[in-house]
Length: 259
Image (cartoon, rainbow, N blue to C red):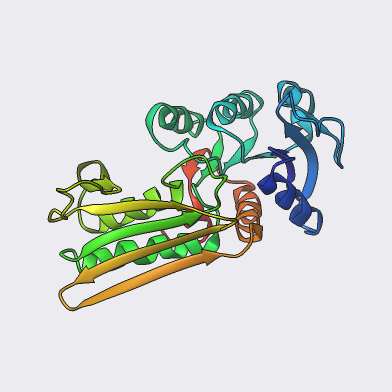
């Protein structure tokens, strides 16, 4: 039975992960961690400790589950490597740029599951749109995502991952064809672009739609999350799957057997 340490334990995702893990007979929550300034320090079961004290409890866990912020995730990756424990990373923003190399280097030494969205449905959607893009590579494609008004990053990591899957299916690199929003008097669509658009409103948990538009028709494929339970369930499924795996960088499509 994997013992897990949840980082970001007092956040919306952290609370949901702990709640579902406590109800799962195949998992055991042995540690909970929050930012040093969090008012939740010293509360909860297990008792939440400061992130600066994670090494004091790391030996209680087999797997770290991290839904925090990139700068903190990097520290937790370093600790996981140092202590030889596996890690599941759901933090948005650690898959590109300066953090991508850190993630890849950690995965050379420990098993890592990293995904911008742990939802089972979303990862099936990623697989679907990549395969569809292979079949209709000349259709115009637009990705639209909707989230609550408190979400800081835009577009979502999931929207980018969907656009990357489309680009891959078309034999392209998203860096060469991605367009993030449109405005101005010269905003007509160029051939081969993949548009990515973000909407922030109300308390929307998360919605993603990929549009494939041709002459006289379009295909719309959508995923709508109604709670965060689907994300937490996926993260816990990843924890179970990781047990006994060799070092390497995996994603939810590995966990679901879609590769």
